[in-house]
Picture 1: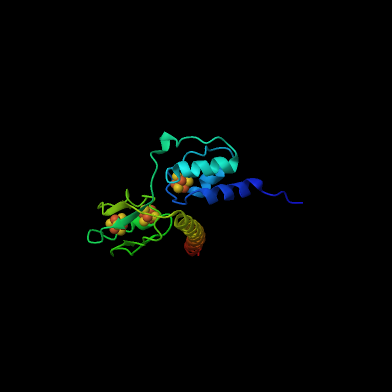
Picture 2 (picture 1 turned 120 degrees about the vertical axis):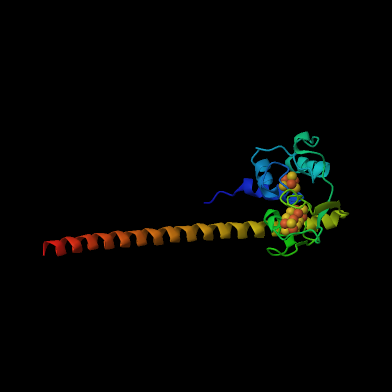
Length: 207
Ligand code: SF4
Ligand code: SF4
Ligand code: SF4
């Protein structure tokens, strides 16, 4: 008989409360990893600046633990916000695309990039990599119901991106292994060819 994974279930319930900004300010690589750390008892419930007091209260009720103030170590509360690119200054380096955890930026190498405002969680992760400082963060007004729908959509985009990144990494590793195997085969053929050539020269010298 299989044992139900109550910890995984609890992590999913904690994750459902988190705002899905995917900013990493909690010290984890996204909301789901933080949810798993809370579910396993490794992390406290007060480390999410975008969720702030509201999320702490919800987690306190869900887990039946005392509420507490936002941990000063993670910085001040982050209100809903959205990023914009000054497209006239963008040099199309793609660094912001690589940093965005929810695929909210569209553009191609050497072409102007733009942010899909509805998909942007305001995580700020695209700001530091931009070499020309052309990304700005602005406040965004979102209602409670709108926030929940946006969080669900952000979770789906985050998961889809993680699957894509994982698949690309697996393909890269497979290509490298195939290349290494081809190189080893080639080296073996060259070694045999050299040995045969030496033998041929020796035989010719004797004869
Ligand atoms: S919104 Fe940011 S700080 Fe809050 S749980 Fe998600 S990744 Fe962590
Ligand atoms: S566009 Fe920037 S701020 Fe918006 S989600 Fe992507 S990385 Fe975060
Ligand atoms: S990091 Fe900055 S310059 Fe590079 S593509 Fe993004 S917005 Fe443009």
